[in-house]
Structure formats: C-alpha cells, structure tokens
Length: 491
Image (cartoon, rainbow, N blue to C red; front, side, top):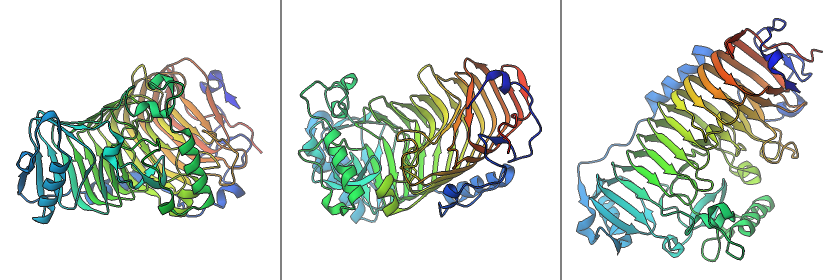
C-alpha cells in the first residue's frame, strides 16, 4: 500500500514498540519464510545496541610498521609518468617484506605501473605530490588472480592494488592513486554509451552471464577463469583474506569499478580517504564478508553507492556463507550517487551490526540516505543497523529506503530477513519522501524504529508495506509531529 502524506502526518491509533501492523501482518508473528533463515540473531535497541560500536572502536586497530623506509626510486623507479615502474614496485615491496616490514615511499612525481601486490608488513606510502598512475593496458594486470567480480569468486584481472592472505598491510599518504578509468579506458566495458561504449565495441555482458551461470552450476572457482580475452573490469584496491589492513589519506580517482574492496578480511581501517571517481559501478568502499571494519573521516564522490556493505551473491554467497559484521562508519561526507550508506544488494551471507554516526550526506545527485536492498534471489539477512547524528542536505529520492523488491524482486526461493533497524537524531532538509519501505506479504520487515527525526521538505508520499513493527518517537514531517504511524490492516 502507499501511505499518503495525509496519513503520514496524522497521529494514528496507539501502537506499542514492535506492534504496528502494516500490510496485514499480525504483531509478533514471524513468517514461515523468514523463520527458515538460519544464522541471524535479534539485536538490542537504543543504548544497548550502540555498546557494540564502542567494542568495535576498541577492537579494530590499524597496523603498525617498523621505522624502516625503502625509497621506490632506489629500486629503479622514475617519476616521469611514462617509465614503467611495475618492477620497481615489486622489488621495493619484496625488500621491505623480506627485511621484516616497513614503509615503501613513493616520492613526488608520477609513477606509471601495472598491478601492485602488497605483502605482509608493508605500508605503501604515497607521499605529498606523488601520483601512482595505473596502466590502461589490461595485460598489465595479468596473470589473473583469485578475486571477486560483483560478489562472485573467480580468477580475473588483478585489482590495481591487491593482497591475498597477507597481514599488517597499508596504503597511506597524501598522494593520489589514479586508475585512468574513463570513456576511453575501462568504463566502456560496461556496455553503456554514457560511458564511452559504441556498438561493436567489446563489453562485459557475456562474461558476466557466464560467471553467474558457473556459480549457479557450482563450477569450482579454479575453473572460472577470465582475464585475458574477457571484459570483467578489475577493482581498484582489494584486500582478500587479509588481516589488519589500513587505507589512509590517499585520494582515489578514475577507478574501473569498485574502489576500496576488502573481502573476507578482519581488522580493517579506512580513514581520511577522498574517493572521487564517478564511473559505472564506482562504489566508494565495499566491505564484503568482513569482520571488524572502521570507515572514518572519508569523503565520497562516487559513481555508485558511497559505502556498500556486502556478503556474497546468490549461489556463490551460499557456498562461501560468511557474513559481513561489526562495521562502524563515522564522520564521513557522502555526496553522490546512489546510496550514501547502502546495505546489499549482495546480502547472501548475511549482514549485521552496522553503525553509522556523525555523517553528512546529500547533494543534487545523491539518491538515498540509508539504502537496504535485497530480494528473494539473494536471500541472507540484514539485522542490527543503527544510524544516529546524521544530517542530510538534499536527496533525489527517499531518505530511508528498505526494499525487498530490489532487482529480481520476489522471484527466488531464499527470502531475506531484515530486522532491527534504528534511525536516531536524523535531520533531512529535502528529499522526495521520508520513507520507501517494502517487505513481502509473507516475509515482512521487522522492528524499524525512528527516534528524533526531522524531515523538513518532502514532495511525495511515503510508501510503506508489509512491516511487523514500525515505531516513531519524536518524528516531525513538514513541520508536523508524528507520534506513531497509524495501525493499518490489523487482524
């Protein structure tokens, strides 16, 4: 159903916490479909939930490195923007690792390179005035490595900066990482004329369909080989099965695809980073199936979601079956393009314990504030999501979107479970509508709470359906207080 603005602004019948009934779902009744989703645990609201954020802050600590320093130029690098420095990066990183760890220093200049593979104990420090300029030749990212493309495991072109199974690694400094993505390189592979593709040019659709088919049929990952002769774009920075990771200070521009992508990693810190790349699928930061992630004081000008929390996709996500959990996002500025904080749509392994505080969001080009998106093809669960102290200037669409019909809709056999979402102390100056929230009739959303939230200018009605437990406490819309949503469809 659509909840009209008139009803939105009307104080309805009293509803106890968790007791509002929308879309004909009885209070407290868990659907048979949702109850089949194992692994999710209910969380606690209010201050109790936020205690876990304090635990994440205490537990997630950036790596520390010995004082040893290795100048990239001592290993043959020339910062003229044309000399290939791939071998110099490899040799400097190997020397730093073999010595017991330290810092590989990239001085001022422009250093052209292919793939950079980090090793344990190494901080790649991109200094002031330094640019690491990544080659536009796909062959510079071969041989293919174990990676993920859109949340499905495969062998593909190496991410530009890559680490597999390493610990205590970092990319730091005030310099720039330039992927040279654009309408001439990398972006046309998406197959969209907006990004430079022309009829007859190569593009990724056949490879993407083949990879999904392999995952659905259970083809072993070692046989899912792409790379040379294929067109699946690499990620920019990817840390796969790593422990103690830091990305700090750098500016990331012109990425082929996802920009900062820790996968199956623990103890990850991303702070004081500026992501400025507006190409296709250019998510800013995508923690996937990770445990213990802190994203702090970052600026996101991204071509897709600013931060997208993920946990594998479909059949491959069920095979790996690792959740993404304990993620803290604070003091960030999220400007464009789709969701400021997105959860999904790759939710198959489950996502829980996500905390967002003291963030600013909004621009004429940003769609949603909080964007939880999944469907019954992806499945999985999303639980224990907390936002507080959020200021949003303007959005093109809804402030809060929680949608089980994203993408494939309700066409699969793996209904997702979404529960325990709290938005507190949020102020949105302008949006199309406060809420777009849709569960399934036999698989409702559970326990969505808004506390001390103000929506100043809205131009459309909110859409709300199939929720077991939607509560308001000190919520104002267009200057009018709303104490509780009306009870609709009671049984």
